Amino acid sequence: MRPTQFSPLFVMTAAMIFTLSVAEPATAQTMKINISLPRDSHQGVAIDTFAREVQKRTNGRYHIRTFYSGELGDERESVEAVQRGTLELTYTSTGPIPNFVPEVAILDIPFLFRDYVHARALLDGPIGQLLLAKFRAKGIVALVWAENGFRHMTNNRRAINVPDDAKGLKMRTMENLVHIRAYRQFGIIPTPMPFSKLFSALQQGIIDGQENPLSVITSAKFHRVQKYLSLTGHVYSPALILMHEKLWDKLSEADQQAFREAAAEAARANRSHVDEDEKKAVSDLRNKGMSVVENLDKSKFQEVLAPVYEEFAKKFGQENIDSIRYYK
Image 1 (cartoon, rainbow, N blue to C red):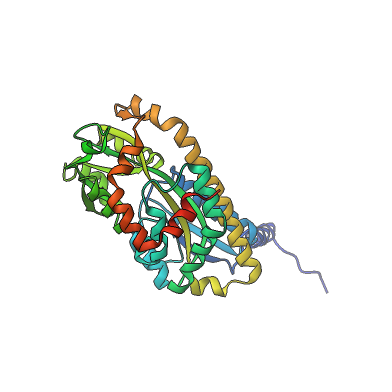
Image 2: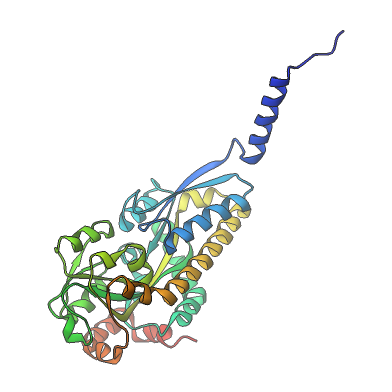
């Protein structure tokens, strides 16, 4: 019996199919993750790193599709979708998180953290891990603490040098009751709105200003619609990578470890990007026409917040606040 002969075209096609099957298994499961900022931001670096590391650490069995600039919804909508299971993953600031996990609101107290070293050590330590565990009861798994950075005020009416300069300014805030209460104490008119609507609201003069970390101010190109930047550093803004709980529970222990390691790599890349933004953002924004106030007396802002601090002590417990404020 004559041996079977295969045409060169058949052999080449079979080889291509085999190569593709090795590179990306037919059983690869696709998941989606969403951020509110562009791809070239500190958030984009985080989810791109996460997607790459998940694929690598699971040998291609999981593929993470990345979505930017709020393509799948704003932060609150994305967290709700993860909670429901209609979205697998999201990267979000803690702005909307107290609406889901109230205990996290303590992190939003103004002037709670001394600097980045303090904030990162706290979140990576026992207190931060305890807070991550709170998400389980809400149908969400919090994989890691990442960050947005220290928040600063911008506006189009005047430079903010002292607390009185903020009085009467209509400023966009997140849907966060701790932020809103503090800003009202400054005399600011807080105006909660989704981040996706912020640029146009500033452009049209619907609001006077906003507050965000330098990484957000630069990546969102707020210099195009804002004249004044004051480095108030009034709130440290952490961020999180969140996953739908039931989906997480379906992962093997090995894959759960792979996802956690990928998230840790994403957080490292994210924080490194924030560090780079902090070094160059002020000079870049000045060169683009913004007036920047750098050396504020933050103690004056804290003095104005004295009545609010008393309310927060009753709400969160002074001992709990101090355990964060004086963490080393």
